[in-house]
Image (cartoon, rainbow, N blue to C red; front, top):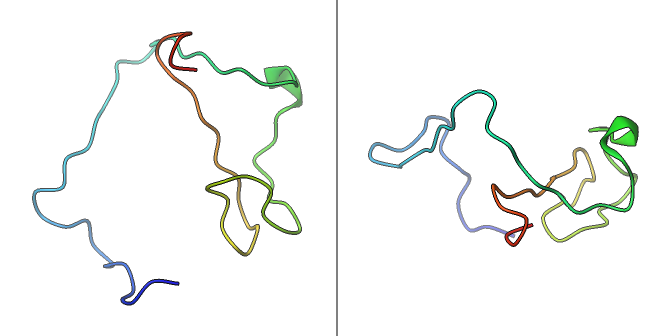
Length: 67
């Protein structure tokens, strides 16, 4: 899939973003958060799920419009 493996350490200069504890996020999902799980699928189901299905990617936004 990729030509080179990802580096073991975070590349110098690569920005990251931190948000304050308590920041509200919005997510539009057919299931309520109490039923969410981070367990993987037997096969990928969504756009950014890994080919192995080993974990899930959840999407959210700081605004309802972004969600």
